Image 1 (cartoon, rainbow, N blue to C red):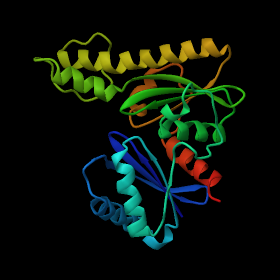
Image 2: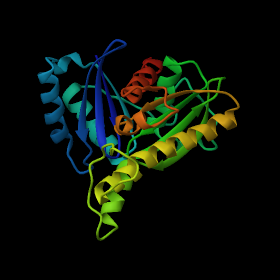
Image 3: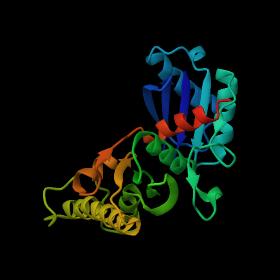
Length: 255
């Protein structure tokens, strides 16, 4: 079995693959100062809860946008699974032709999303990843990764409203009944939910115009369920897209 680990700025998502099949997933909070042994206790406990013996994990792969945690999870894999995991980054085969000005600037999560999208859908494709940041990734009809856009995530914006203003409260990211909020909480929810839906649709339409043709639009990331229902351009939500991409890239580099 393969243990795929997607380390983001806010959450760490883990997926256990049995061949091509995603057996189960887990989500942990990202803590840069947490030790390998501490993460191992959580992960081994989760595996036992799913009736997966640690000895069944024979391969590992990591996508990480928090550099200090690469060392943490490398140590964890070696100590508890006796594995040297694949770390997605420069020099790793991805199956994606990258047309970015500097490919080394491209995050491993965005690479993984592109690899997964190409394995699942017919290009051109636009992937909208709604996590700590909202990233738009564009793949041409030839299968080339062209680039995209990056905006602050909806969670960051909600927290900024609360922390940078004296009178505005922290609000739940849920859909208000109407756009015209009749109280402060509803007004903030309207601006956040409907505002981000408009941001997503606006950027996607601009990318479509530059491509000159309609692209498949797929959303992923923890905030996707919050926003997608209010958009008109998102065609599909795939919550496990990054994990699938990690598996695809791992399979290309297995030998």
